[in-house]
Image (cartoon, rainbow, N blue to C red; front, top):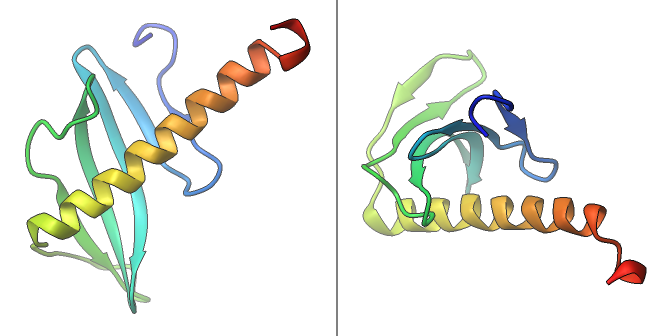
Length: 102
């Protein structure tokens, strides 16, 4: 896939997915309360984090400030990303194999 597709962007949360040989890079903005977090994570093929993600706050001046988030917040953000990827893959599958042909 890495030779054919350079990146994909999902519809709902606007995740940018960049395939790699051992997983996928995920970039998106995540709203949490009154702040927006710019998220960068690398997910392995089994949809687990390879290492700690990179998180920046996004403000109106468009300056990003690196922040630390708790393991619980990181788990929540990862869960959102994985669900979005699963939903996208289901949409692709359903478009390729409509119900009437199954």
